[in-house]
Amino acid sequence: MLKIKLALAAFVLSAASPALADEMFAVTPSGMAEMLFSDDPRTVIGALSSKCIDSHWTVISSSETELVCESPMNMGQSILGQMLMGNSYSTPPRRFFRFNAANINGTSRIQASGWMELQMAFGQMKRTDFAGPEFQNGIMNFMSAAGGKYPVGTTFPNHVFMGFTGADATDGKYAAVRVTGLVSGSPAANAGIQDGDVITRIARKRFKNTGDYLDATAKAAESPTYEVSAIRAGKPITFNVARAFRPAWSEQVIAAPRPPSPSPQVVAPSSVADELGKLARLKQDGLLTEAEFDAQKKKLLGQ
Image (tube, rainbow, N blue to C red; front, top):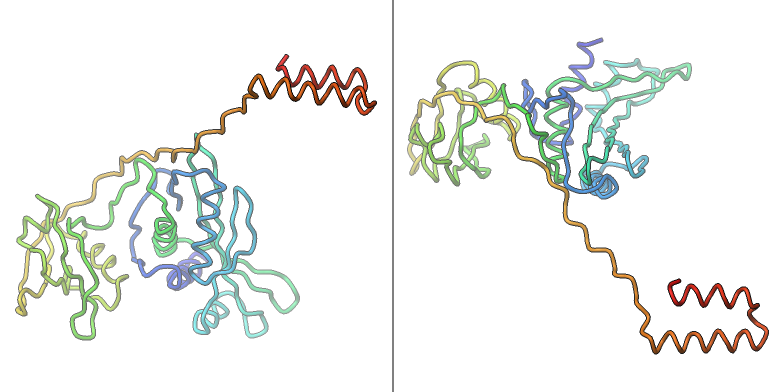
C-alpha cells in the first residue's frame, strides 16, 4: 500500500506545481505540509479558494476554517490512478485537496492534505491518501503562491543552497536558468558564477523542466562539492561549488494590520434637543407610551 501511495504522489501533483523532487524541500517542525499566513482564517480561505480557481480546480466546499478543492486529472493520470487503485470496473479516480485553518492571534496556520478516491463495481468507495516529498513539495509551493510563509524552525536539509536568483532560459531543447543576481559570499558567488551566466547542469543533471532543478539540488547535496555547468558569452564554463544548506527559517509571521473600528457617533447637543422634541410630540400624539418615551430619552441622553 505504501508503494501505491508513493507512486500516486509522484504524478498526482504535476498539475499543481512544477516544483517536484525526490527529496522533501522544506521540513516543518511538525513534519506536516503547513504554512502560516498573516491574515485571519476567513481571508486566507478566500485566497486559497481563488488560487484553486486560478489553477482550474473546482471548489467543492468552503467554510471559514476549511476548504476542499478537486483537481482535474488528464487521461493519462486517470488511467494510471485506476490501475493503481481499482480495476476496469471502477469509476475514474478523483483527486482532492483539503486546507484546514486555525486562528493564531490574528494569523492563520494552514495544514494541507490530499487524497484520491474512486468507486468500485459494487458501490464501495476506495481512497488513497497522498504522501511523500512530491506531494509535500507541490502543495507547499501551492500555498506559498497564495501568500504562505514557512513556520519558524522549518529546515531545508535535502537540497543545496546556491545563493542566486534566476530566470527561465533554454539550452536547445532543455530548460536552463539565467543568473539574475547573487548573494554576497554565497556558494555560487564563491565558485565564480556571475550575473548573466546560463546554468545548464547542476551535479551533472540537465533540466527538462523547472522540477528537474529541484531534483538537481537534491542530487548535489549527496557530496561535499558538486559540478555546475553554464554558458557565458556563448562559451561553456564549469564551476566546482561547495555544498551548503539554507539556514533554518526564522522569520516570524505578523498579523496584517486591521482597519480601525469606526468611532461611535456623538450626537451634538442641538441634535439631542431636536430629537427630544420629536419624542415629546410622538408621546403627545399617542404614538409613544410614557414608558417608551422614558426609555428612548435615556438612550438618547446616554444614561
